[in-house]
Image 1 (tube, helix red, strand yellow):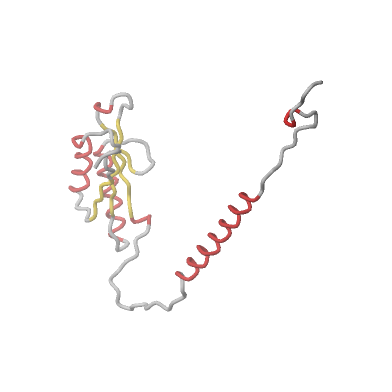
Image 2 (tube, rainbow, N blue to C red):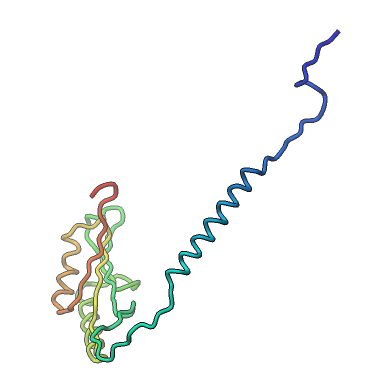
Length: 156
């Protein structure tokens, strides 16, 4: 006589899908999005804002800002110095960039605006490599100069 346990029966193996946890997650997501959507809608209450007639504020657009990029001239060894470019343009010497800045500043002044410059520098550059670009912008008497920096990763 051969004894067979119920686990070793010759019936096929069946796999059941327990959909209850999936339904719970879907229900929680629906509740979350309904609540977030309601909060976002309540924060955008329609209002009639005042429109001052003699306001001195001027809206600043992306066109009012010029970006001066400083990046290493040699990616393998950033200590070799920097190359400079206005926006996405190819690298230029600082003297040529100074002439372009003077032209752009004059055009903005004719239109009644001012030229604002943002200097973006690669984190691998030394301050000594970025300082000439800062001095070039400062020598042009441009009233607004921003320097974009980022703190070291993993530290302060």
